[in-house]
Each structure stands twice: as C-alpha cells, then as structure tokens.
Length: 257
View 1 (tube, rainbow, N blue to C red):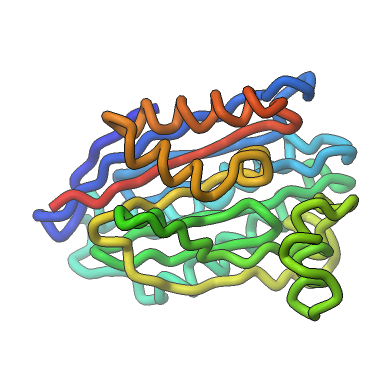
View 2: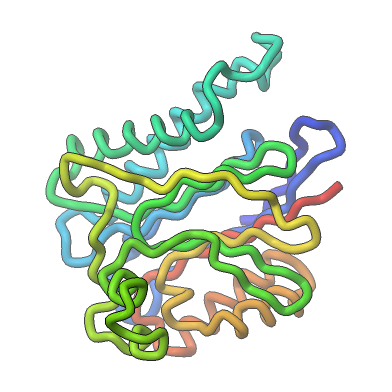
C-alpha cells in the first residue's frame, strides 16, 4: 500500500508503503499491519505461531491501538477542539497498548502477538513496542539502526553475556518470547520517543523479514529502490528467496518537507 498524507505542521508530510506476505512455509498469514497517515500512525503485529488464533490476536492489537489513538486525535483533526490532547503521546500509546491487551485476552485468550507501533508528530516518533517485531532507522550513509529491543530469550541471553551476537544468530530457540501482548497479567511495553531520521527512513517489520534478510542487505534494497513500494516488494522477495520461513510484514515511512 502506498500513502502520502499531510499533517500539522502544514509543511510536514509523509510518504509510506507497506506489504504483508504469507511467505513460503506458513499456510496462512498471522501478521497484521496498519497505515494511518492521517494521524501519523503505522503498526506491525505478528501473531504468535503455535498459539490458537494468532491472526486474531494480531488483528485485535492493530485494530484496538488504531481505534484508541484515532479517538484521541479525531476531534483535533476535524477542528472540533482547538488544541492537542491533554495526555502526552507516550501516555496515549501506553493506554492504547493496555486496551489492546484487554481486547486480545477477551477475543483470543490463549493467543499472543508482538506489537510495534510508531506515532509520528512533527519530527518526533513515539514508539510502543512488545515482542520481537522491530523498528529501524535506515540512514542514507549506510547505517541501519534498530531502535527497539527484542523481548526474546535469545536477546536476553546475549544482553547478559551468556552468548555472543554470532551465536545468537543461530540460536535454536530464537523465536521464544518472554514478553508478548495478550500474555500474562502484567504488561510492560517499551514506550519511548526518538527523532525521525531527517534524511532517511523509518521501517517497521516482523521477524519474517529481519530474521531472514541481513541488515546491510535491507539497507541496500531500500536505498537503491526507485520508490518505497518497490523497496517493500524487494524486501519481501528477498525474504521469500531465502526460504520464506515465516510471514513477512514491512512498512517504510519517509518524512517529506
């Protein structure tokens, strides 16, 4: 999907594109994604494989987060209120994720999902993150920077120094999460705000992409593509060419103006 939308301030706009693909191995797609450029919101969620209703969980997460944030911003978008919401963007995202947790536990109580959501206002990006989908800054000088932290067993072992980064890449239980939306009574999402990469891109993706295609290859495909839609297509094709072992979802956003 290709989108281009204006948002306050008037000189700011975004171009974005996103694709979700089943891959070569899975029978159905448990990923869900959303682009709402009119409120500056992009979301990727990966339903937990092996759990009942993984696709229900990811869809519920995306739907609930989008609905809550839209309810907060709609009065200002249509000039029904003169100023911005009383809560901070981080508070809005925190509540949106909590509401998604409740929805999943009600609609698909035995399931779970990752969630990586980006809410852009001006030149700032507020991220809500649970699980091992990722948000990246893609810089034009060759750097690819992961700005989220995987809530996975293998990442935790790497952080504690029990395994090396190289060992982590081939660890046998890379998909085991210790934190996921819909799981457990206490939810601790990562909520933070960073600057939008001025001359680069913001990318959200599921592990069906980053777990298969190397960071340097993703960076090259994005910067060499003639447009964002082609970049997303190239990334999905590369993941499928590498075996497509999981569902693949990717969204790329570029700040214009």
